[in-house]
Structure formats: C-alpha cells, structure tokens
Image 1 (cartoon, rainbow, N blue to C red):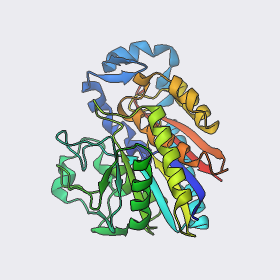
Image 2 (image 1 turned 180 degrees about the vertical axis):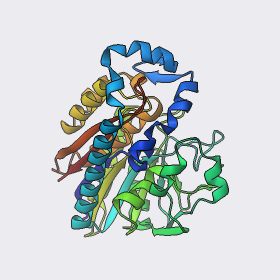
Image 3 (image 1 turned 45 degrees about the vertical axis):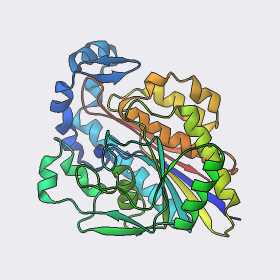
Image 4 (image 1 turned 60 degrees about the vertical axis):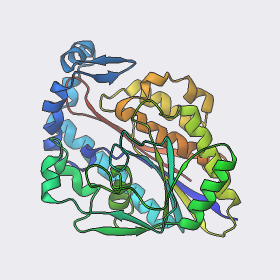
Length: 335
C-alpha cells in the first residue's frame, strides 16, 4: 500500500515574492477598505490603528525590519524546496483554496478534488496584469509561469481519494479539468505558488484538494477540515500502490490583518494534532485570508495517522502598516 513520507506547510502571500521596499504597495488599498476582519470584529483602517496603538506596530514596518523578515521568509522557502527535493515523493496531495480564480458565486463547492491528467497554469497577459490590484502584479511571477505550463496530475490516486472520502460521507466535487475562471485563470495561486516556489518548476504528479475557505455561506468548519484530512489520510493508506506520497498545505496564517495570538494558538494545536483545540478557536477568527489556515488543518488531519511530526521552521509576521495589515508567514515540515 501507499505511504505518506513527507508533509510541508507554507504560506503563499504576495509579500513573500515582493521586494521588501515595496511591501507598502497595498497600504493605499488597506486604507480604503472599510471592513478589515480582526478578532471577531470588522474595522476601518483608522479604527485598527487606534485599537492596536499599544502594540507599537510602527516599529515593525520600518525598512530594515522588513528586509530582515523578508530574508527569513526566503530562507524558509528555500529550506522547504530543498526538503521536497531530497525526499522527492512519487506523488503529491496539495491542499489549497480558490479566491474566485476558478469558481464563481454561481457555483462554489465546499470541497473539490482534482483527478485529471493535466493541471494547466497559463501565463498572464500584460492586459491581465494591468487589471490586478495595486501591489499584486509585482508578485505574480511566484504563481504564474512566463509561458503556459502543464503539470502532471495523478488521476489514479485522485479517483481513489474521491471514492474513499465519498464513502465516508464527504460529498466532494470531482474535477477532471480545472474550470476557467471569470478572470481567465485555471489554477488558483494557492497551487501556482507551490509549483513555482516549492517545486521550482520541476513538477511532481499531484492531486489538488480545493477548499472554499473564503466565501459564505458554505465554508467548512475547522473540525470538518480536520476530519476530511483524516479521511484523505485513510484513502492514501488504502491505495493499492507502492508509491510514496507527500502532502503540502498552502496558505495562511493570519491576514490580511495579522493576529499573532491566533497564530500561536493555531500552531500549537496543529503541532499537537489536537482537533478539539482547533475547534475551540472561535469560527469568526477564520475570516478573510486567515481562513486559509484551514488548508493546514486539513493537511494536519491527513498526516495525523502517519507517525510524522510537525516541525515549525519559522514563523514571520510581515507587517506592512501601523494598522497591523500584512501577512503572518509560517513554514513547517512533517518528518
């Protein structure tokens, strides 16, 4: 039977692939956003500045600090890429989310699994790049290739996982091809980042698990994600193959407003494989980009029965404004 030999977890935020001198490229948009999610509430930029004044976040956004934190993130990404290269599993299960890149408000499944032969990652045209929100185009290289790319799927494992988790009462959508989304994309950036920066354009056959972490009303709970992961782990263990499987979670941790308290709580619970502790985190903490932490939770569930243990390589809160906007980056292995 197949066995899981490696797990990785990595944030994928644009700041990871943006020069630190340009981290403030999104601050103008932050200031205009009237609805920043933070610890159960919703705030304007100015309200966050006042609320968090005691944290002295202005000291966290000076350029020397940004340079230091950016460098720490690059070292962690390089370490994960090297770890994957050393292990080089035969097949990967990638857990990520979609942000209206392939699904639309007319059709948004809670869980979907790709079981096709080919995963397409098209290059972005200059016209498309021009439509991206401020501060995003500079980082697109980390998600999209210079020329259209096609990566191998793992349809035999994909179909086996879909059948197995369906028998365990997970009604997942099955995809033999990725939909072309409303903006002409056919691979969410949660996955493009893994191909570009962790696999370094040397793709390994993969199954994609796409979760709707962002969009009401059908977001899965943290507990449901953990249990889906457990079901995926059992599916892999029952797959009649001698291939070695790696599991990679993409996304998180807290953003677009950083909450280090949430991050510490979630990391500790994931290291302990403690589903109950994850379920005790209030559901309203998993909003906006912070919801991507659920991709990690699904991976934790899948790895829970393997005997592999989580090692946190680094945790780097990358602030871009005195309001606490930015992205808390985390990097982990399961060995």
